[in-house]
Image (cartoon, rainbow, N blue to C red):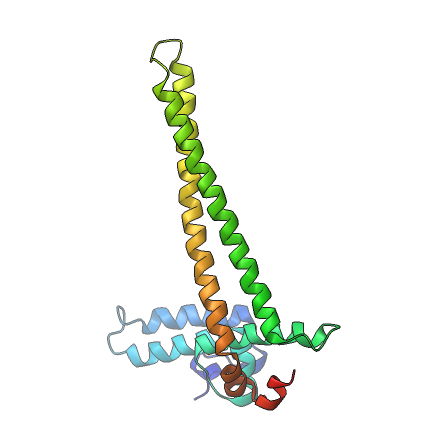
Length: 202
């Protein structure tokens, strides 16, 4: 049984994304293990069919080859195809793929450095506001200034917290770029069937 039949799509390859989504929702409810204890096997088939047919890249591969590939590899392939299109459409075809990754990596590193500089600046401002607070005696007249300083300190602390999260995400992106770079040749061979000699001579 093919994936379109699993989802009950009588239109097959011309089924629209809305039809795929609607049939998936209906069938997943019907065969969900909480509702149908004997439906686990069919539920998993429905889930796999939807994951493939709802992804344009995965669906194209399935329609052309009849194969269902690993979802992670499909996403990597999509990214790879975008990178290749940039390389091949560039006026300077000789631009090495490694240069592309270096530019991406350097850009992320520069963003991380900027965020760390802002965070360091926030830390100094928090310290300065704290020193000013210590020098002000709490009275009815100074209460407005003290409240203002508290608001500023809180704002700097919140900004620093957001920067921490952004730095973590940027480091994850950096790891992905470097990992993807080193595994790019294998990805080409596995997913695109490209000649390694061509890749080494781009």
